[in-house]
Length: 319
Image 1 (tube, rainbow, N blue to C red):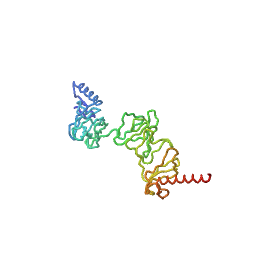
Image 2 (cartoon, one colour):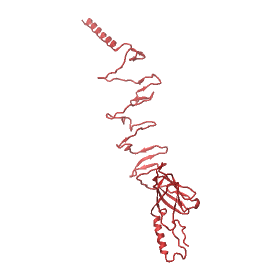
Image 3 (cartoon, one colour):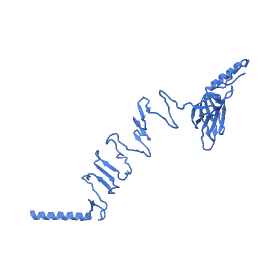
Image 4 (tube, one colour):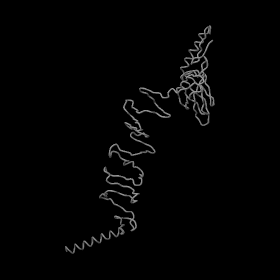
């Protein structure tokens, strides 16, 4: 009597069986072996569970090496691979669509009461069934996969984490090094978030400690044609000038409650003025801690009178 207990459910012809049709049965087996190395599809109905059974000595998608799951789902679907005695490797694609609810949805691959493998929508996974009967387990073949040598990918996505200490250029030069603790070192940055080489672009760029030039005095903030907008400086924080920080400027909130300049300051010769917008005897020019109460007109009058008196005195002396 023929049996079908192997992992591809091929017909194992019993002794004395298939007289005159042995060749036909063998050809079917060979075709099914070929199918087991090929591509197949299985359409899922809109339900929370489904069973895909590898039929005895009959062609079906479940036997295929690459199995594409289709159909419209309204919820996650647990797909049981049967029989639970089949030990096999599958590449399974979740190509299901959303039936119109809040999907798309995942397919959960199981065989028995053991562990399962979840395949998110539009994802592909390599799974292995152990064929352990009622307690059969499904394994994700690429869990903890270790690759030696060079691995190439056009796009590499990691749903949880991607662990590597070094990313190299194709010529072997170090490109990005990631140290323990999270320090990232880039050999050369062409552009981050921008299309122009050497440019870093973003809505907000946050620095936890400092933004530093490559060398002292080696980089500008803005340019003659691209000026920055407003600059906000916190209370009691200084703008420091010079390599030795000889002159500082701050809003002295915890002291004078004014703009405080520490260090000598000079107004350059030429057509430059130092203007006090209001000087009315109440507010205006303060020397030391004393408000200058006279007006600019008074100061000019004193200066004019002094000059006139000096001229008269000189005339009297020298005739």
